[in-house]
Length: 368
Image (cartoon, rainbow, N blue to C red; front, side, top):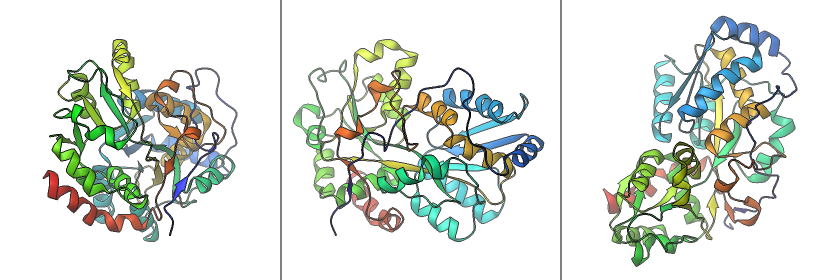
């Protein structure tokens, strides 16, 4: 079987600008009025995910409540953990049948597929999915399983470095070979794939598309990296010049730090990989047993609306699978023009999870 490579047209993956004006008129779900009434009674919703920052959550909560008229007293809780930790908590709640979370969003196709087979999710009735997402998801080769599991968004890992750090002024990264060159010796970070679904799927995709990851890891180890997991601490290590180069980070983290400290725009740089960028779609579903299922269904729908998409894209500088969007000016410098890059997927997003143990074992042999 040939490696799966997807070349997206510009409209296949795009981003939205934060809507600060009047609400956009959008189609309503068939049972939306009933859901709104029930959600008002529930009075709260909890989402667990690895992405949404505090800044995004502070915007999303009020925007969600206003969009559906849930009232100023409605409580929005954003619980952010790593990809592995997000899946672990949801799995534990499913097994115990004691739920604190209503919605989970994470890139874990194998987990969502297995959970859906066990009846773990509420059925959705979206007015947005078929019209704005379904065709794009299919063309992009991403996993979704509507009406139970939708895939609103994606991100991809890119190299990020700090030109202000010693020896980093003339660094440029456009290939994996650049991340293991002699001039980055003692300056690198190795992303800990043992704790991350998305790191591991990235590795599997690269292997499927012809890259010798064991050879790469041997070379990366020779640069004397530190092993780190979450993108935020890795970004801080770059900002503080504890390390100069992180081969796998999210450019939205650069954007968020530049918002806090504009001078960082002068020194933080982002690159890409000519070998290909692995697009990591994030799935979303409402847990069957959730304490606030009606609010959960509305929240998933909100993530699919233009307004909801605007909120998280402006906050995180990530990619949306909603058709017809163009990069807004505020985040455009931090996003790839996907029509100009080789984009990679997986042969089988669900079956890939069976390869996790063996894939991680190779990493452990070198870095643990």
